[in-house]
Amino acid sequence: MSTSVIMAQGLDLTFQTADGPVHALKDVNLSVDRGEFVSFIGPSGCGKTTFLRCVAALETLTEGSLTVNGMSPDEARRARAYGYVFQAAGLYPWRTIAGNVKLPLEIMGYSKAEQAERVRKVLELVELGAFGQKFPWQLSGGMQQRASIARALSFDADILLMDEPFGALDEIVRDRLNEELLKLWAATGKTTLFVTHSIPEAVYLSTKIVVMSPRPGRITDVIDSPLPKERPLDIRDSAEFLEVAHRVREGLRAGHAYED
Image (cartoon, rainbow, N blue to C red; front, side):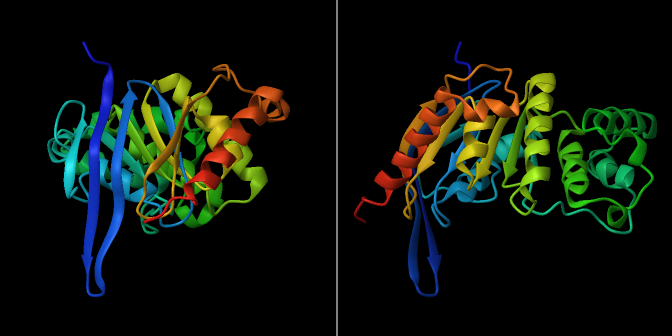
């Protein structure tokens, strides 16, 4: 039986705009196995987020095929197969942190008792157990993003889609959240797709790194990480880490050599 959770074959996507067609993704072939942590890295406008949006059924491919848990993206969306964490935390300022995390559970019709238990569990998981009754403005940017991750985890979807969730944070906070995210991934076993512009972040977090070229977005390299599952931050000084980072950099450079 296949362990592939996400399978893209010959995926093409062209947007029709007032200025003419925009070719966003071209001939994307990718398989993501259950429990993998896959980072997508490439220049701005290369289709990283667009691919995530295709998985989430927020965009419709023009050609090729894409399955999520063996279903079409739209069927997977209706089956609540994934949680989505956006670049901005997107918390409602008038709701408490617990109220924000609870929102998808309310929409899905969980009982009050089940809502309370799930919110308690995921807030503990992201180390915000003591902050449920605070409002977003009372939390730092890093804590707000952790609340956003808790919300995406609240209904226990198999897949976590993360679109540059730490991009706006300073490096010290980002390092801490990278460490926490790895622990979270180890604890939950979620299949995770993660968009980033940071080579160190991609190499540190991932079991697999997908390197993409400028538009139309193509995959120039897929790197299976040789790093161990346990990764202290100082692994970034190791020869293995630097070797993978070099290969990512070379893949990004090669991507710029493509002709449209």
